[in-house]
Image 1 (cartoon, rainbow, N blue to C red):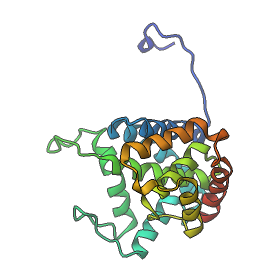
Image 2: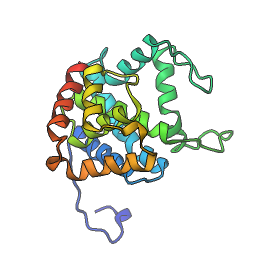
Image 3: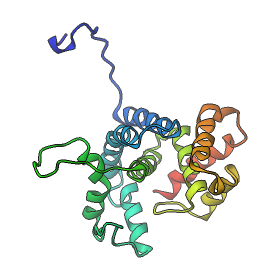
Image 4: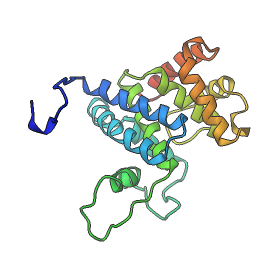
Length: 216
């Protein structure tokens, strides 16, 4: 036992990395729906995203989820973010995607005294991570629920989705766009708490399959 462990017993756990990442990602989804601060959600989701991205890049070098999201945004004409940051190249897109979570965990540049983050930073990381998990065939119901919920609340966004998936999301969560944010979160939390017993359960499994097919 390490002397740094203090009074805690050495009850170590070993997990396959994709499973570890999915546990982190599922927890970040629950934290989002429970209304936790975006900083906590983002910080929990980021290592999950990094692990799944690395695994997906090795398995699908040209078709991993992050690259597909970037290509979709490029095809829709997005080359600049609202703050003027370029995403014209894939590496620039990665810099933008990881900017907020990286700023929240490093202090190696003396000039950078503050970190800026928001719900959108957490949402982008989580969506990309969910797509990677589906590509690796390790996705969970919570991840499918998050993707359906997000599509129902916001509509199609950059990424490997299609009108069929959008229609399923709208059917599973009708009227989501008209709900206030706190009510949207409540609907999401109810779904992940009760998903085996809710009418959307079959749709959730179907979206898991669609996510995997659309992203390979």
